[in-house]
Image 1 (cartoon, rainbow, N blue to C red):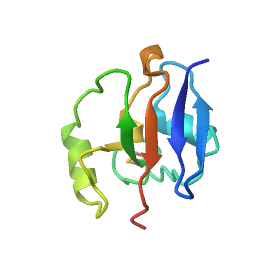
Image 2: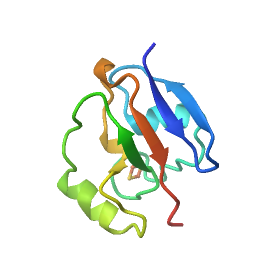
Image 3: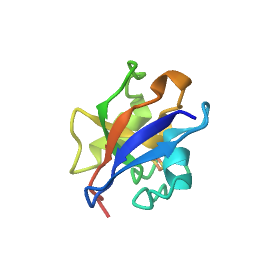
Image 4: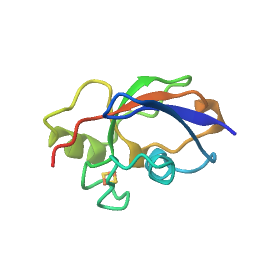
Length: 105
Ligand code: FES
């Protein structure tokens, strides 16, 4: 099963398996990464699924307009910032590395 490699806020690094077609947010929540609050349920409005993409085996789709607006509301935005709910995982993303961003709440 493909997986993403997640660095949690406490510095621990864990492998989280994913089902291709699932969103990255859904994968992280189901994988026990409880820092990902996903308060809006994945409709790109809360910003609580903010992650930093450290390394991706494939080029990710660009940040969407709505995603950009939500990320602008974070004081922790960097050029690696993405909302996990806006990334749909494909088999080629096996090995993608990310870090959970600090919370804004
Ligand atoms: S889950 Fe709310 S913006 Fe991603």
